[in-house]
Length: 187
Image 1 (tube, rainbow, N blue to C red):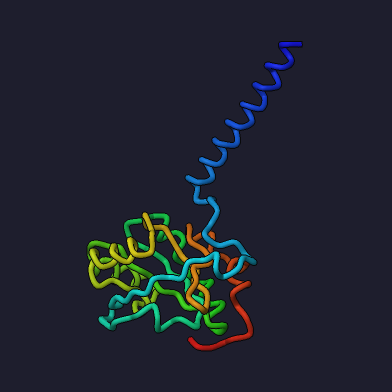
Image 2 (cartoon, rainbow, N blue to C red; image 1 turned 120 degrees about the vertical axis):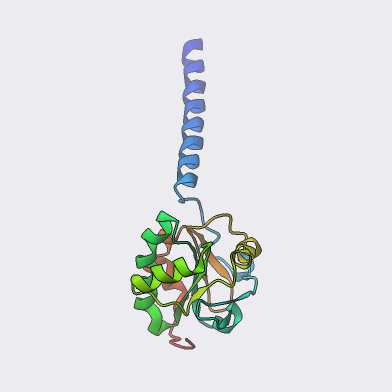
């Protein structure tokens, strides 16, 4: 009997260890729970902290001027392979929903702004929604919003609440849909 008992405890312990390992793997793969849970009350979400940065064309862009839209905020750099890999998808998603008030703002974390501009132009991306100023300013926005590393995106609803914070590959049509209502403006 005693052998069965210790075996049972061993299985429970092994199961707990397995769950812990699985949770760690999911966390490392960017599959950790986001800051957003669909259907939760607004009081459970954090409002986005306001900021402004110049875009690559030299025009000051304020996050506040885009409130009223659903904002995809992408933290990106040309040297980041995962960033450049997710870039086409996040642009395509925004283009699909642009007429429903979805805007894409990109905080560029390149050291060399001209290298970033060259990459964008060579690959047919706009530069007016890419925010930079300087590397220090871009990093300050990351710190302000609690972002630890590039390859990170946020989904901000029309009222300015962060509904998702995580890997850009997880920003999908299914994630966007609950925050798209009948409003097609402003944009």
